Image (cartoon, rainbow, N blue to C red; front, side, top):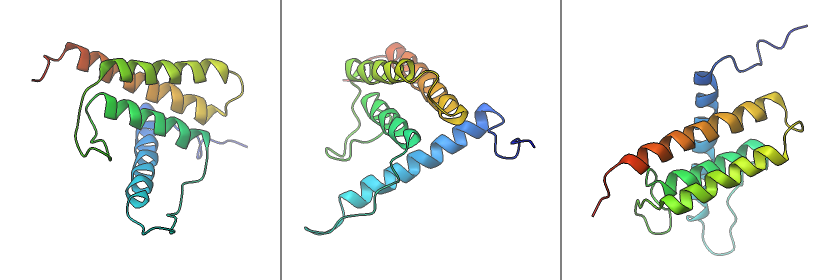
Amino acid sequence: MTDEGKKIISDEDWKEQAQREKEKLSEALDQASGPQAGEHPPLPEPTFSVFIAGLATEAYMALGELENPITKEKACDLAHAKYIIDMMEMIKEKTAGNLAPEENEGIEALLYDCRMRFVNASKAPAKE
């Protein structure tokens, strides 16, 4: 019996899955600011993938690529982005050998993406 139908085949497949999870998380964040007092928006299922996608989203905000939902502004803070990326690396190391293959592929892909975006942001001229 093979799991090839369920297995993520390429980086592009993983990126699409990670993007879908980021969109779900973004929707949950949007809904969190919408309800009236006393109402609770539906929350995403607490999975390792959602947790890591949340950290990656925070890194993207720190890199100035996503709008901060509180300030409604984009701002680059490389020190904060590095901290989040380092936290993701620590989680990857601490969970080594305990993750499902798709979880391991996911954290690897998001770490790579965050690192590449960090390098690009580090090389960009400072905005005044």
